[in-house]
View 1: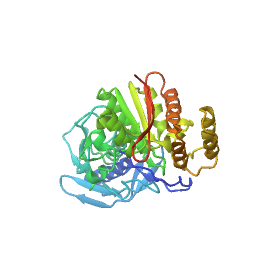
View 2 (view 1 turned 30 degrees about the vertical axis):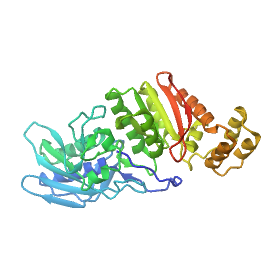
View 3 (view 1 turned 180 degrees about the vertical axis):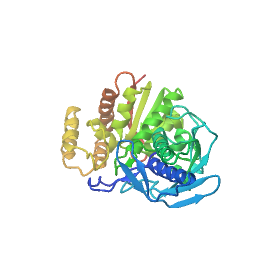
View 4 (view 1 turned 120 degrees about the vertical axis):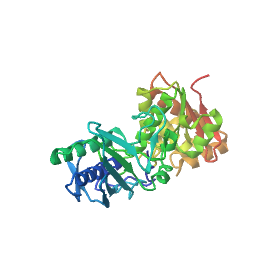
Length: 369
């Protein structure tokens, strides 16, 4: 699951951190088991984080019956623009047969894995290994304190999770019915974009597990629609790379596929051609001097070279090149392909496609015949 970062400039390091859905699920589960064991609901509940330290989270709702306990925590993502911020993450804990251990189930709003290539096999609830480990740790702490065995069924739920999941990568990754419960460190770092990069990597894993030999990494919906038409690729082969060229290319170097299409708009692929691995306009603005150097190298008309130093936007320069009949986007495609190929290595053949804002192909650097 991934959310898209804001288009604004990244904020200062003073912004508030938050907690992952995995941390919230672990807290809710621990609180529910403590109540089920007869020790009452701890409020706030304290959770040990995977890399040390702990966090105390308030409970939003609780319920205790003779055969189960339920607790819920409202996720606070801090200052990160996360679609799951404000969601209620709940856990129902019920006794299981002696010696059966801990079994995880997907409640309403939590997805189920249906495709190979993810960290969990098909059929399992989309509660990732990191959160499962956090949940087990919390349950074992309660078991040690109360003397109750940790033979339990844990059902994690997120109201409205199915609707929220439609805004994430889950449907494309074959995670159906709701959200994934995520979190490696338990902490949400504002604007780290780690969830998006994680989803790109899982998309590559799923494509490889499905035996696909060709994937496309696209910077946005316009280039994705255009490359889908050009190559007739399935959803599994389409990676929403966004600004994260580095995260995509470096992962493909370690987990290669035979063919990679990099597709995007002129401005973003100009940055890739200049060697940038982060294509965000605020974090990595286009360097006019580098573009002017490229224009001189490829023999562009002098007025175009001069404009490169003063143009307000890449679009202005592209339009000027079009008016002069100079194939600037083609040269950008070729240089971007060379940069991408160098990052992924020889095991992956790379082509680059450059599109304008209407979806018209304006540059193509082939990687295979």
